[in-house]
Image 1: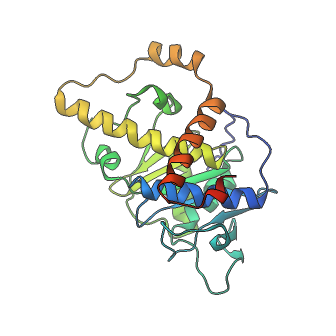
Image 2 (image 1 turned 135 degrees about the horizontal axis):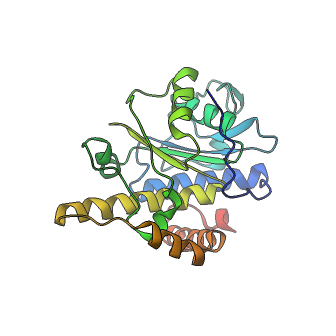
Length: 253
């Protein structure tokens, strides 16, 4: 199987482990509070050096994940740092194999959003870009045919094969995988993926839905500044979360 080395967006210098622990914890709690992650799913971040990553423990509530809870795993799914006896998520291998194959990816989110996954359950109605920020997936959102949990390396490699050079994918009757160059980028992309799916679902209910055309995607791409957009929305969502008590204000300083 050919490995993909996609470089659509050059990754910035990898933040410190301390900063990544905060970003993963904040993103996890944010996505949980927005009913995207809920009781199952996980966010990970590649650490400096490229061969290890942070991920939450299997049995820790997504609403309570803190920086000190996060485990360090290697690309074989082995916990190399963390609380003794604490296990990583059962689908750790989707993170392992994507990081192994895609050096451009520095953060991964896996969740199970029902409305988004509806587009894997009907024939001839793929999830296409409907909202402008969905140009992130102009290359496509492939659907993995096997709904099983990604609980071993072989299934992880099959996920990589389906993902190819794209930035997101769906697992039929199961859930979504979103990838990005930063943790904050993967959080914003996860929000936009769900927003796009919900808009598409409503549009299809009204009649003949009209996704973005190639010309519309090209036009918006010229004015879109991804870095600025991520910073703006990260500030918006984190400040709101502090007001609502989702996580401590000190985390965002």
